[in-house]
Amino acid sequence: MKKYILSIDQGTTSSRAILFSKDGSIEAMSQVELQLIYPHQGWVEADPLEIWISVVNVVNEVLIKGNITWKDIDSIGITNQRETSIVWDKKTGKPIYNAIIWQSRQSSEICGKFDSKKLIIHEKTGLLINPYFSASKIRFILDNVKGAQKKAEDGELLFGTIETWLIYKMTNGKHHYTDTTNASRTMLFNIHTLSWDKELLEIFNIPSKMLPEVKPCNFDFGAATYFDKRVHILGVAGDQHASLFGHNCFNVGECKNTYGTGCFMLMNTGDKPVISNNGLLTTIAWDLNGKVTYALEGSVFIGGAAIQWLRDGLNAIKTAPDSDECACRVSSSDGVYVVPAFVGLGAPYWDDDVRGSMFGITRSTTRSHIVRATLESIAYQSKDVFELMEKESGYQIPSLQVDGGATGSKVLMQFQSDILQIDIKKPMCLEQTALGVAYIAGLKSGFWKNLDEIKCCHKYKEIYNPKISKEDAEHLCDGWEIAVKATREFKFR
Ligand code: ADP
Image (cartoon, protein in one colour):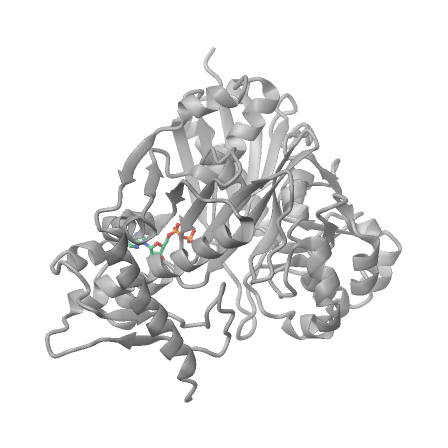
């Protein structure tokens, strides 16, 4: 009988369920959009029950779409938006506050209070103090829900990131587990000792009783009794980590970049954590049977969002895919540079105060030049992170695996290859995140026997090779460097 792995991909704006066959292809997929809640400027929350119900709905729907029953499911993998935090009552299972989404800035002030601890936090967790990570979000909930701190100390509350919440609901409250990758994003987990860190828990005054047990990514997280008790959850990983695995970046120095709203680049650094002094994060790539692989991570704040700005802010294009058609009307950006520092610049600049700019405009500059320069800006920013990653890790990245919505732009992909002077490889399956966690679950169950079988599933849809010389690439990049420098000097507001 043909069997499938069911992957659940719980993201910020949607939940997806996907059935994968043994050859790594998608048999069926179901998706629902999620409502985000914005209680105040900069705050982003969601209803944890809506998240759970959305998962129930997509799982039920994907079985109908695939015309299969639970008997046909080998096992389940869960991948999720990271850092988003939920606290619920141990007795009733009811959340005491909304899920605080990773993007939310509501705990910025709390983070400010821990600034003096930034070195120790960085050393132990590989992270920088920032409201993105879970610790300050938990602190926010315990500070703002009446009686919560005391209840947490009395062992009456549980904390979880999204995968923990889903495991808890799917096992009807039996298991309170997380996996090592998600734990590594909480700012409470020591990535060297692979355990919750007592000193960090004291710093943030978070009772250890509320934390889930940390397990490897390919652990048996329990029977999904809510759906069918015969089917077990055998793979769990945060979204960017699952994507790195989906891309088959199994060797040291291999790297993927996801071009979504922002860009997320992760590089496999093997069994040793590389601690960055220039703003890259150190994180756990995956943990299989307790054998940990580490990764370096760098992000670009404005990736595909720059294309949204062309569409919604400038009305320069009607839809995101139109950007290529418009850019192709000219053969180059003709010296125009766009620096989309709309919310500051991340690695390697880390400049919060800088704002976007445009350079090199003449009477003959057209909409097409600006659209092209905006697409190119995504590639330049990714190049900055890429070069920093090579420098800090000491590895030379042989080629770059890519995914995410903005890889729909052939202009962007070709330009990325041109300025990096390496091959850019876009896989056949665009759901690398869901596929990655399917691989992890399927390796555990024996659905796939080993990594070699998985490598056979990995096929490319498009490969881009550099089409310009190294000298021309360097010349273009020199222009970008000057544009960024000038942008950072302009601080008039
Ligand atoms: P996220 O997971 O962050 O929501 P997605 O991977 O769904 O992001 O990608 C959406 C982003 O990709 C949007 O910012 C959009 O502007 C951009 N995008 C989508 N299609 C294209 C395209 N053909 N060309 C350029 N950008 C695109």
